[in-house]
Amino acid sequence: MTIESSAAAPTAPTAADRAARASCFAAFAIQGFMFASLITRLPTIKDRFDLSDYQVLAVLGVVSIMCAVGSVAAGYAAARFGSAVVLRTALVAAAVCIGTVALPGALPALLVVLGVYGLFVGSIDATMNMQGVGVQDRYGRSIMVGFHGMWSLGAVVGGIYATITIELGLPLPATLAIVTVAALLLVALLCRNLLAVDPIDGHADSVGEAVKASVPWVPVLLLAIPTFVMWFLDSATSAWGGIYLIDGLGSSDSAAPLAFTAYQLVLLLTRLVGDRVVRRFGAVATVRGSGVICVVAVAMIVAAPSVGVAITGFGILGAGLAMIPPLSMVAAGHLDSEGGGQALARVNVSNYVGYILAAVALAAVAEQISHRAMFIIPLVLAPVIVLMAGRFAPRTRSVTS
Image (cartoon, rainbow, N blue to C red):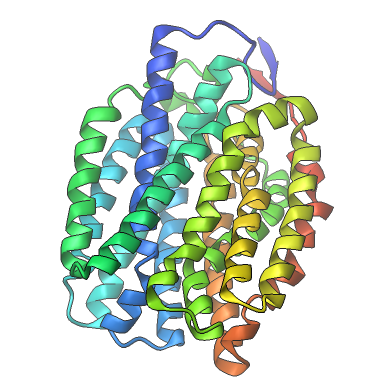
């Protein structure tokens, strides 16, 4: 039997589908909250361990490399055991790691803890997107942007939480311990109904059959390029936005998380209407328009005469980048010949490659030129999204059984 599909046929969702959608929403939100609660405290961690910009680079590099390893490993693990099992396990493990980040007394110990954390973050990112594409296929319409919107909602809450704890002077260990406890409780309560049947589109008769899925490398790589640029820009904002405001524009420490928070807030607002935009204009036009917005936003950040203008630029950048990750994951999820999720896991590696190269590039510019010039490279890369928007076109998949 041969099945041609770019998404599952539109059918009324079952009660199990609706429950899976709710659990998937929760998984995205929990991951966003955990990530934001940690990444927005990077300036604090930098000061606590007296790190130079190059040492910050080393920290981000270790985390990014381990995230990439975790993403690829999750592709195989999810194909064998199911993405739901891998996702729940990784969420719990990442939450525990966050609680230990502030405990080490030396940089090597910090790198070990963050490296383990990165391994599980990569697994979470891959498997929660597998779940998201799987649920969308069951609904038969675009809902993936909404899942990423929940990630943004969690990230906004995490950013606000970081700002409040900084203002209150709450010690970093206590701040992160609260994040751990909250995340563990939320996973236990809200992530019990994830899809138990893989792979994406449900073409194989069992989870184990997905291991045999064929993964086409050329389409994966071509889709990974604009996805990489998106994550490069996201990394520049998430990891370096606060440092740019403090060291490049002279903002206060308490204002530093506002770059990330403004970015994530607009990201969230855009994603609330994103699925309707995709349904009306299609994936290619949506990505192309998003790329144009990105170019304008990064130019605004580079030329910003004040902190307020820069924060506004970061917010606009959120509108530009909001819909690229979910559309990338949908396109990647339908590249596997049997829907096993391995192509998605491999495209997801571009996330961490973007983080590594952004860390290298921005740290080098900061050290060799100035913090004020950090966002020149993101400005040069942003047009790639416009030029390669065609890679996000809906694709069909043939599966023979």
